[in-house]
Image 1 (tube, rainbow, N blue to C red):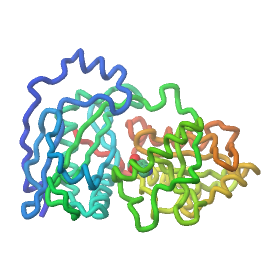
Image 2 (tube, rainbow, N blue to C red; image 1 turned 60 degrees about the vertical axis):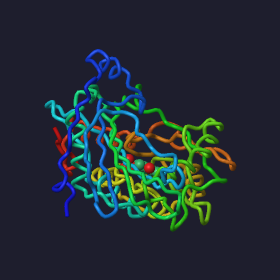
Image 3 (cartoon, rainbow, N blue to C red; image 1 turned 180 degrees about the vertical axis):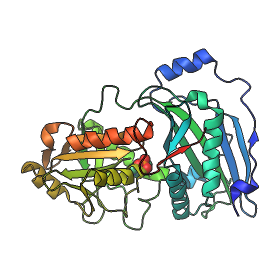
Image 4 (cartoon, helix red, strand yellow; image 1 turned 90 degrees about the vertical axis):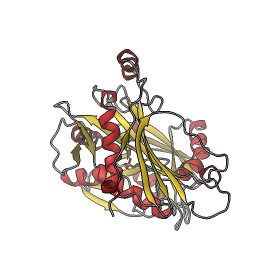
Length: 365
Ligand SMILES: *Cc1c(COP(=O)(O)O)cnc(C)c1O
């Protein structure tokens, strides 16, 4: 049963959309996640009925009972991707089907209904189609799409809810780094972990973020931009950052190492970086990577570059890791050459300024 075949979308255009002047002012300096487009998509799921009531409607507040299950037990998942202006004026998405698949995996882990991939993709196309004027046109800018789903049943008993609300909202996004990427420092959290084996580390759920906020605040206190988590069992293998996967470059060996999947989020950017690194003639290795290795190999210079990646920031060089056992500087604290090559290659595919060799781009409008 494909939800997309069963569901027609009811379109209720916003009677008071932003004026051209208002939108232009926002697009001139959108920041990240602060302003939203004229519309949103909502789709309901009810036990015994399935997916229904797909609607494109004016962006605006939701009305919820104080007993809504998500507010108490955090049954919630989300996705994040970007819509881009193609060189010919069309609109494109980057590997959106991968997001649709991951949304299904996240739903399964959180005992939520699985949204058919086609319905997920259709919801994105509906929103991007009606709000396409909101896609910024400048280099490295995009329209950030945030699909999410939560337990909307008003019920305090502890069991999977019988009603869910799926939404998609969209927010214009500036270039993450206005003056090009500056290497960040990361704080190695020894006290807190983000995910244990058997937990929810591989699901894109809000709960993972809730528990990362305190260590993230600690990172800021220590003068770092981001926190890096170690594994929950041995407390020594690198997992990932709060919302980005991490890579280690050994230039003499032409090897790129990244932590294996399991307790980390299977990033779509991570997967793309693996492919691009191979295209560049690097061996891509997924394995447990310890903080001791990071420290020793940075000290003797065999570890040449470290970077993080994710949809929001694309690729970010990491110049320094700070922790209880002292600082680890990599590559003189500067952005590495492979890091910058990978970043440019990825941006070129996403923005249509380079060839799409792997079929990652789909046209939606
Ligand atoms: C979303 C996310 C990432 C990055 O995934 P992409 O698909 O590359 O955007 C990495 N880590 C966590 C915890 C995330 O939630």
